[in-house]
Image 1 (tube, rainbow, N blue to C red):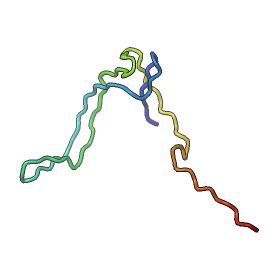
Image 2: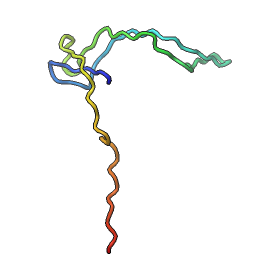
Image 3: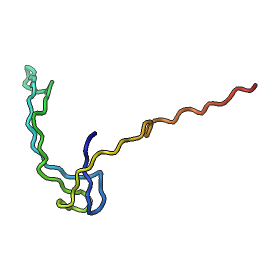
Image 4: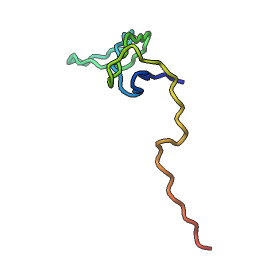
Length: 87
């Protein structure tokens, strides 16, 4: 189960400014022209330093909550309506 943020001040659960530090190990691939692409990247450490609510600007009322389970089929395309063949 993953976690997410919630602002206890205004109830926001979707918009936050997050400052974090990340330490990675990456395989950098350079073309002969000097352009770099990252082919593989492994996150070794990821530390969230601060979180601010984008709606009300508070930083002291941010809660870390468990992500709610999304019901199976939620957001999926509805099944086509089947009609019974005449008997």
